[in-house]
Amino acid sequence: MDIKQLVIRELQESEERKVNLTPRGGVMRADSPVAADMVEALSAALSRRATLIHGSFDPEKKGETPFVPAFESYVEQEPQANSFLALADVTLSDLVEKMNNRQSLSSNAGYVIFSHYQEDRYEFLMIALVRNRPTISLDNELHPTQIDEVDLDKLHQAAKINLTNYRKGKDSYLSFIGSKEKGDVSQYFAETFGCTSATPSKKATGDLIKAAKEFCSENGMKEQQEQIVEDVVSYMNRQRSEKQSAQLPDVEQIFDQYIPPEQAETLTGTFGKFANSDRYQVSHEFQPHRHTLNAVTKVKAKADNWQLDFAKRAVGPANSGQEIEFDEASQTLTIRRIPSKVVEQLRAILAGEED
Image 1 (cartoon, rainbow, N blue to C red):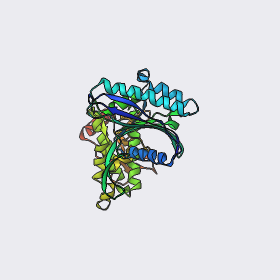
Image 2 (cartoon, one colour):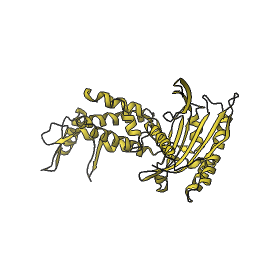
Image 3 (spheres, rainbow, N blue to C red):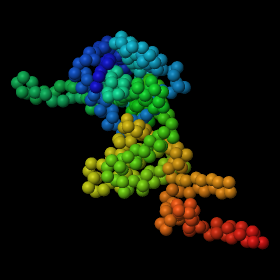
Image 4 (cartoon, rainbow, N blue to C red):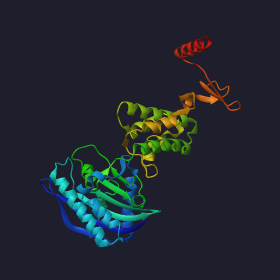
């Protein structure tokens, strides 16, 4: 990991629950090995969260937050410590104002860490809010004593921008920790950084199906893959028909039902994190996309005089016993178990032709 820029600032909260930006901190040494370890720990902690929302800047709210224009100005020029500090400070001023204008349900004190870094082939800008935690140390006389240390494992809020994907114009380049609680610090973060969870539903639906297939392939569950994907698609269809969003924890429960007993300890409860990772970027919650679901489950064919619309699971080769059999040699379809109503319609048509 290559740290390009690093700024750390402190937020304090008064007895009246007002948040203040203290003069402490500022630009930090980006070449410090400890700084690299810290940013790497924060990035790992964010990746472990299974409740990340993936999206982009909301174009309709671009003028409502100073972060987006300041960010655009920063990425358009050669990165400098003073311009990164200016970006951090204008962002924090807006964040503090939002916190103080509304009643917060939790403490907003802590340290805000801004980092611009490169990891593998990607550049990122990450903003994280962390706090101290008490821990035990031994003094010079080996007496146990309590000290405070920064808790890098527990992110109270964070947002990460994939600068590489942003510059390429990708649909999704922004991830942040989501929350529906009013007054939660997550809400202030999302508003301050212009976040929107409007990742296209088509992409989210397709990526979830892809993640489902690859999770099965990578974990020795190929035999269950077809049924699992069918159950996942059925769940999304059901949520869509009820005008509800799809939720990753619900999908994870579907997977847990199929995990073999010998893999239960290692795989149970892991699909949500797998699908929510940078690899797939499936948001914790999203709207299923009807056409994408239909493309996975249905076959539609049309000729001059007929058209077909049937479920893929109903099709099999000749002599398979499936409802619809395809004989490749003769290029014909055989439809079995025709509903009685359709049978009567066909009889009526043929009777009419004979007359």
